[in-house]
Image 1 (cartoon, one colour):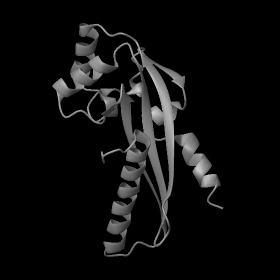
Image 2 (image 1 turned 120 degrees about the vertical axis):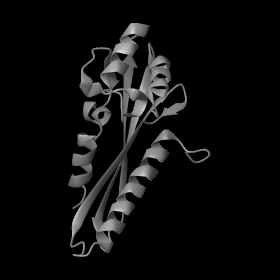
Image 3 (image 1 turned 90 degrees about the horizontal axis):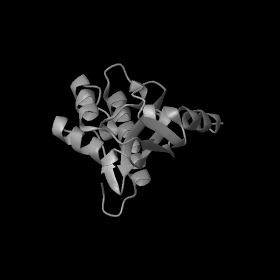
Image 4 (image 1 turned 90 degrees about the vertical axis):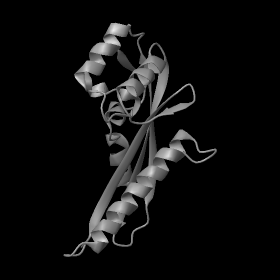
Length: 159
């Protein structure tokens, strides 16, 4: 995260970079890119001012879940749409507020044992239907990984 960057700015920047990386790959492909709409997204969780990306390992996941336990937190997703070749990136940010119930150590260990935390921002997956995550405000699809409402809105604005 760049100094002074908000979670929303972070995910927008990362989504824009992902789109640029895909467009670069398309442009250097042997058979050429043709025309394409690139959709890129990046998601982080944020709790008490800490950005929670994907955990590096089980212990890191345990620390994240301990931080989130019993607290409200936010899931931020940056979405970038960019026409290739030559289109300008269009950026949007979705925000969802969740509350995680207080988790007993054995509940955290069971979830860690499941491996479902791997590769997920904040070390959890709302789609895992654990029962201990509740949306306070915002989009369920945002928490799962692609803010469908924002995507539909951005596609409608394409003209």
